[in-house]
Amino acid sequence: MFHSAALKLTTWYLATILLLSVSLSLVIYHFSRNELVSNTSRQVYFFSNQLSPSDFDNFARLRQKQLDQGIGHLKGNLLIFNIMVLVSGGIVSYGLARRTLQPIEDVLESQKRFTGDASHELRTPLAVMQSEIEVALRNNKLSKAQVIELLKSNLEEVAKLKALSESLLRLASEENKSILTERVSLKEVVAEAVSRQKVAAKVKKINLKSDIADISVRGDQQGLAELVNLLLDNAIKYSPVGSQITLSSRKRGKNAYLSVKDQGRGIAAADLPRIFDRFYRADSSRTKQNANGYGLGLAIAKKIVDLHNGAIEVKSGLAKGSIFTIRLPLD
Ligand code: ADP
Image (cartoon, rainbow, N blue to C red; front, side, top):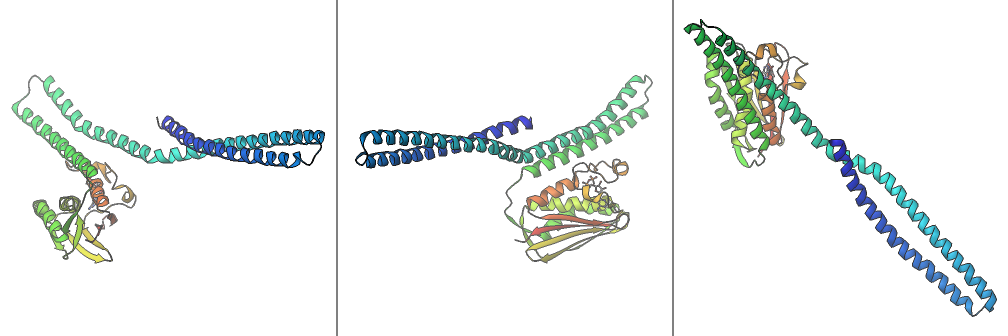
């Protein structure tokens, strides 16, 4: 599909280049021919009084022949010029067409991968539910306890599907956002995210320490609260019971920095470059057990940061805890 689109685009580019080149050649031909003709006429007129009639005839014939040759050369040169434009223009046009289409091809490729991953993730809980229900239906002596067990298991799978579809919707909505004009207080953003995660932290007896300066950034309040919430959610999810999570901020140059530091299991160096990819989970065997773990959280976080013209980076090592730092332009 892209090959034929590239060829079509090449044809259009080439047609434009050729149109310009042929028009230019016609103008050059027109002026040069006129110049040659008027030069010849001037000379013939000049010598008409100075030569005998027979010499003049010979001279006029010679000049006419030279004029025809000159025009022939002019046509030949312009033809060669246009052939060269056609060949080099074709190569340049194809290169340009590929370059124009490359970003679209990349986006489509990543969308394709995303759709494949999303359908795979959706299929797994559905397949589990289907096989459990089929097995139960084949059992004629199904007890009440077994039915309850089946419903509980199905409910778990439904919860997973719900969490996944919510994440997918969030990702899609972040993708479509574009205008960010509010003045946002980092302190308020962090307070909102902390209040959302209070219960989860309490359940794991995690101490949430927040030391945020009075800094304003320009952006979307809800989006930024979601961003901090996602980082906090991970920090809690991947931290041991009774540990500490610290949120801190600082200003440097034209940027604000916000860090979320945990004492959790950390991330292996090999996984670090991929954790912001959609559906990437550093330790799938462990995280698959978790209803909230679909490897979409950090992809959404990255989208929000990108929308704010910021950056996100992580420092981590296995069993060393992690520090996620967001850079946002100051208001
Ligand atoms: P998930 O839903 O699996 O948490 P994320 O996109 O939020 O997906 O994170 C991707 C992966 O990065 C996780 O599966 C986890 O392995 C790793 N990760 C993210 N945050 C942390 C953290 N604070 N500590 C340890 N590992 C983390």
